[in-house]
Image (cartoon, rainbow, N blue to C red; front, side):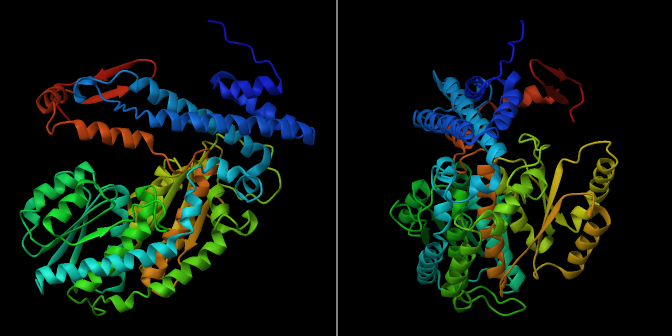
Length: 548
């Protein structure tokens, strides 16, 4: 089939983007960028056309989502009755609309640059961040006040029910945005050495019950209250210990907690509540503060630096600090003076934007892969930053924890940096080092020496230093900063930061499946399959009689 010829022209280029004509996309974006600099009226015409494309395809995404399509992407075996009519088609339509919107936003970025895209006055932020996630990030002071009270109240219920029951260890069950906040809370307690109780975050579907006994405090957390894996954890663990509490916005978990009379911390569910959020990843402050106050109020075994007590968590000071941070890297702060906005662009493209126009060599599609690194005492914060880049910004990110990461990866990092410097290959990575006085000093020194030896003048990297007087303040600073940075990165990358359609639909499909569905058939298929490689348009399978 003969390839369609590219015909230059503003209208044709805009139609090319709106039709997602892959073979002409680079020509269209390049033509619009060059044409926009010919005159101000031409620039306005192009930007208005791109704005219409963004608006139209944003509406399409919400329309398809409201039809509740559910496409698992798995063979029909896994879906009872097979896929319903229209599910695959709606899913593909939504993804197509999202990709068209991304192409339009990237074209806008190439014309006006990241500063005008992110700064107030241009009107682009509310157009792309349709759910108002950046606005809700300003409500963290309300998150602190709300969940402080709910954590303390739940602790009172726990104490009234269990008295001074000995707690030898704590297991917190959750996934994704309902696990990360509690991992950060665990890390804060450990860095302050305020408890001798072992705290474990269990990210599982079927945890081993043998490691839970009557002296284990089990906390079950699910933002929606309907996370299948967390509910299954509850079914497996609830008979092994009576020391149980829960946290959710509603759903089955809240119902079970209320019926059992267990301590329950409710995440705000009313849209008018100033602490209301729409997505689990937005609830990190809500859940982290609630867990810290709950554990402090029930009274854990003291650590090397004493006991964790509610009075040590100064919520008024925390709220004031968060408000001051918001002024420094919130959306009203301009790009040139906003470190979160500047880092967002740097993490995507690996260079500093300091001029009104992007350089001539700039390619909007040539993105970097963020590589987030920190030491063992910051591993929860490193994981949170990387997962926010993945889920919120829709960027594949890598994470590594020192000292283990230095032992395992420093030679690979060095090799790609050196070969890139010699123009043998392109270095795809940009490195983000998280640092804090909570880090192990010798490991921090080792990371600094690694930067000087391997990356300086050869690789793109940034160092983000935590601020605050306590481990809690420093952890909140890094979390709050990166929440802003990854939201800005989503906008620069061409996405509304809120929707996670594929994850949502896979959850719905999985919720309908009976457990062990097709287990025997799947095992029989995998038993004699060593490796399966798939590519477009076809695929092939390498088989062997010896399983890997």
